[in-house]
Length: 380
Image 1 (cartoon, rainbow, N blue to C red):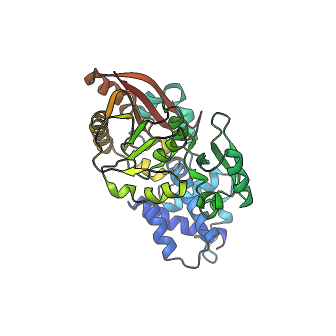
Image 2: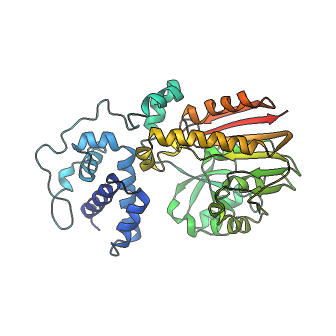
Image 3: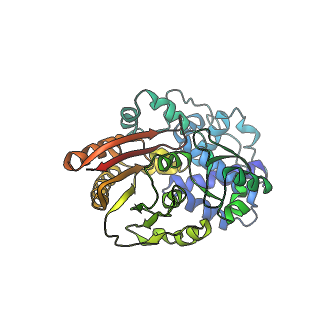
């Protein structure tokens, strides 16, 4: 595909997304109907679409319209390119620019949804603008080294053998930032053999901050794919790892992932008994991951946020019942919004005198990678 044809494809996909179709679904449908597109073309179109969604408001303002065409024109202008060079109407390129297209201004335009912006500013304070700007850019790819099978040096060496460059974070040696050829990861020996797992830096730092000792019983109460369950496996010997999710189907890949990682995890739809550590990474707005899933920020509504906050409170209460006296409860979200984080914890502590706060942390792209919240509580 020519650069102009890729722009046309991105316009088609974006128009479907703007009409209400989820981004991944729209991209998949385009890919299935475009057998002529190679892997490089599909990756390029995906990048164009996600870049446009990260900067939807400002690119639409520059391009002159909140349409796929307007977003592509605005994106080219934002990157210093002349849209007329690609909007030629030749071959599969989009039609030439009409009068008035591309003459807009993005001054004062925010790429955080208007209704969310006041809450965003209150939640993030002095760093709100800087975090909002960071969300306009692509997120890096991070790996977690599985210390059950490899050291960080071993993992880096095996990755390099597949042409993938990675470097450790200075705060956490087992967190590797991929610097070259990230698209080869799924086919790499390091990934297939369980030496590394895809996991963002921020949740890795959160898991590393949890109190773990040999022989502990650990319950991942909202396990999903089991990333945090597996992250705990290498922390100490003799851990009993139990994974639970309200929707067991979300854990369908966990047994295979655990086998690949060389660890034992018990899936339990109705866990019982007391646990030394209960992890509750609850469903949330995902506002901390908006640069990875940028279409989700445009789909979020106040009603959806209210429903999530109510659900989080209910899950937190249920998870707390599984913490033994003297044990710990780790409440986590991938959100930066206060109602899901500190306000949620404060409400729980207000009605749970047998729990006390131990620590809290809010990571953002300014000091880690994704936005991620951790509150560590202890049962008296």
